[in-house]
Length: 167
Image: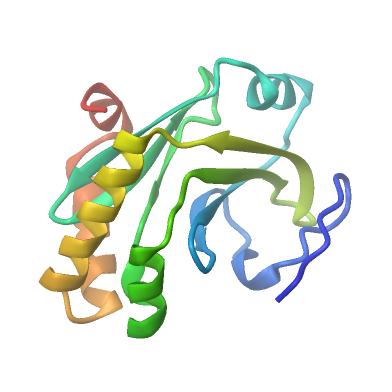
């Protein structure tokens, strides 16, 4: 589906409007986007989001990758990958594709309003680790719900500060 994205307008893909803060991964045919949903985005949040201090890394546990974001503010969060949300042919196509860039969308939770976007090139090392981990995820889990269960366990076991220290 083709979407038009406009800053200060509602984010057009409403599937992710679950009325809560956090980050989520949205798979595309060969890559992914990251939706950062936050309440009460202010000018300081926007400045940090668009700054050079935007850092990210990949934490992995039990064949599940977590994209960790740290911009020295309340925007610090993790987003987990569950490739089993795709159909098997979609997952296979995704794993064979290239995901050398990711677009981050900063969305105000109230009204689901797009406040800013940022596209970042991913290092080859991060791309390789992500694909290797997701390939293991396909091999180790049968159902998306199994991955979701492990994601819940991992996020309880590893606070974001610990995840950050390992990326």
